[in-house]
Length: 151
Image (tube, rainbow, N blue to C red; front, top):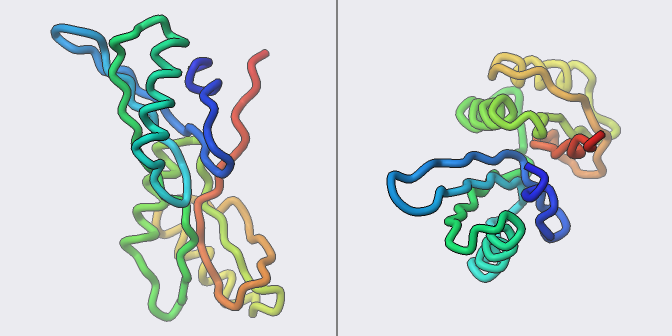
């Protein structure tokens, strides 16, 4: 974990989970799940893989990067996107650093916002809050919480 937390990730990208998979022969594979609006380019994952292998002292280490998208999804309480909300809820349960939050325009009707929060709850996760947003749409998004500090 400390080696993964020390990866020099670009702005807006955060490691949210790791998994080590033992191989029958050869070095293990480290899977790093990262949250970002878009997947990292192959060149970036190659550089990060070499960095992690060097930090762990395993030059032949295999590293896989798994992208977890955090783009907002417009939410219409009259026609909810149950599948997408379910995916977001599952990601938030799997990766504790991710939380689901609502973003609403400042003039949003509170009843509509409450209905949207209920949709998120029905998807299986408690919304982390409602953020004021300058956009015109009510959206739901995954937010990355700060990494815990080593004590």
